[in-house]
Image (cartoon, rainbow, N blue to C red; front, side, top):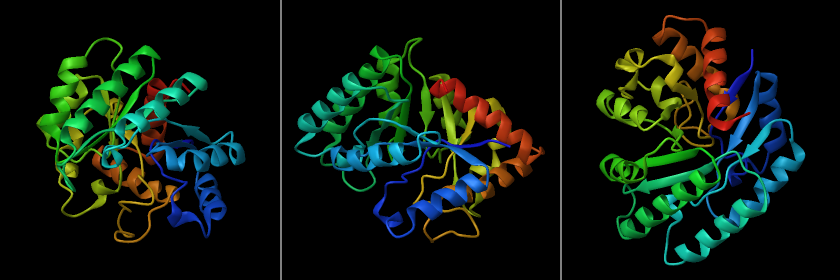
Length: 255
């Protein structure tokens, strides 16, 4: 059984004490495909180190995370562009809009989001979207840029059924993680109305650990709990859910 974690921050400082052991736990659990989103330039060397240590298991993205869009946005975007032109990545991400923490840089976030989407389309790469308290703003940008080249993942999807269908209409898969296991997560109540071929698995480690680890540090091996919950929701087997979601990830990332 091959399981794909489409979104895991393995370079996070929270893993500095036991990173290799944590990654090995994931691999031992069958989570052999680990897709690594970017945040900003300060994490890039750590991402390269991961790729060098685990070349068969880690697949890097490049992008500027919306919560790291600040006054130096043009400098950070220039770094993203330079790296995209320099080497291969599997996606442009994670990119998007986050209005939960701070609305100060909304215009800069919108600019960075749209700019990076256009770069992704130029490179025929998928995008991986971060959306927090910003569905309307995200959909507004996607409406402006949609065409046959727009493809990707709506990372950490926590919206409504209507918003799920709208995201899918933009050729996005829904990234489903620990929230689906929460008693108040809500998405488990309608997810079975979304065909499984629109779903990919993720952890967003070290964040959003699934039950029974909620509130603790998340890690990629915990995706098994998400997998089992989806098997219950879709009245399926874990093996079937793993196979379909991994195939979905291959369609998005091309590997």
